[in-house]
Image (cartoon, rainbow, N blue to C red):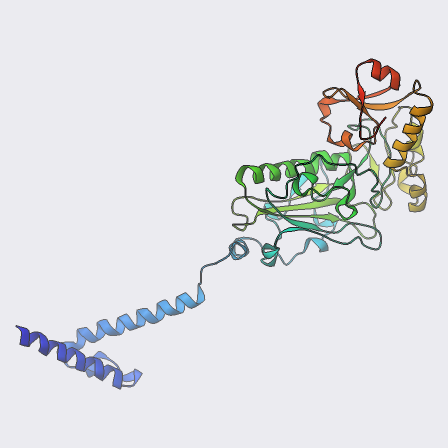
Length: 382
């Protein structure tokens, strides 16, 4: 029995040597003894299978990074947000935001190697913001209350009131990357002139959603906001907001939405920020008429005229403070926080953080408000 096994082994070894010494074209089972034809077929099939497997491995290597995973599943990011205009988005039809690109961000593979922190575009020659981008995480969420931003006047800024707007003021200083996400406050490269509607109805829901996701999961998020300016307009038509969980290429969390910089019932001239709409009938309604023709046919107001008529929030607060010092018993506009029992100038940055249910606009004297149990805000000192 042992001799028979050695004989078979010797025959197999000889067959293998014969295969290796032949040219590729002659390595066939036909050149072997009949008793070893099946053995050769097995060897040849095994060699071919090994060759096919090697070729497959060289062409279908599995993605190794989150960026590669995202690049395989997302639409081509050849379109940069910087190249978009308002014509690339549906016209406003009553919703504050609309999904863009199937809700898939336009991030490229390289964007996922961004690193950390935030990157803000420099202001252009017209003083306008560009794209703001950042890697957001639990460590970027601020722990301190936001400070004042009233000293910043973004391109196209006007201080103007209209009836029918929450808080009456048409424009807010809108953060591209929200303070609640990155801690950047009075940074001109991160603030645009945006309507109250854009700020609260358009951007805030996505900002809150992203903050909640980071806090809930501890994950990092690649985040980008691009203001969309048409031509040389000083006021953006809207903003494109994008976000994706950075560790898995957006598999767990992602969005891509365009938010409209409009205010229902108000006509805005995006070239210079002038506007027209229902007149605010408070004591300072005259200031609206001086803000680039905002209560008349403001769309035809010139940029220079609008700029001359605009009143900065900081200036308005200073003027109000002087007035209250000279005549504390004269009536003027204040904003009450019915929850904290504090009162503010309408231009105070704390007003922007106030929940609508706690806000009450009044036209009363300072003494009367104090007598009603309210205390002056320590930030704006009304």
